Amino acid sequence: METERAIRERRSTREFSSKQVKFEDLVKILETARLSPRAGNIETFRFVVVSDPKKKNQLAKICIDQNFIENATYLVVVCSEIVQLKRFYKERSEKYLKQQVGAAIENMLITATSLGLGSCWIGAFDESAIKALLRVPDGYEIEAVVAIGNALRAPSMPKKFDLNMLVYFDVFGKPQGFKEKDIMTRETKYEK
Image (cartoon, rainbow, N blue to C red; front, top):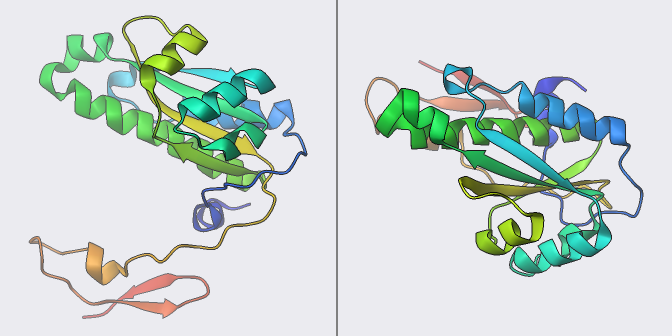
């Protein structure tokens, strides 16, 4: 699947089938996360892959009873560590950390979609409970849980703002007239 199509088709899957994701596909997903951009090429994240049904059940409860995630084949717990970034980037390190972790997670979601899989980025959870369950050492933060599985059905696209509502040129608040050209391909055209 081409990249733009995968971006347009990506959805937060909340219904997973019992069909298992191939391990090779998981590796491809994690590889694209590894290849994401990062400040100074400093490795700040680690991934804990959970496939054990009992642990997935516990994680579902820890993720504020988002029980649908236990039906995913894999739950990838994204952990971050900021010490090296702070050494080089001081006060900017927290911002850089969040940016690069977000980029890694987005790469995972887009790759899952390109492989015909469903995924969901989970940000609501009890961090200390996840750390205890997965024995995540002190100094690491839990950034997200990413559920990966075969979607039972494709979720519909939620309503999104038009580009006119999101994009300004030269100064904040001054829209320049983007207009949707083709609703099917969602191409946009700049109009003067």
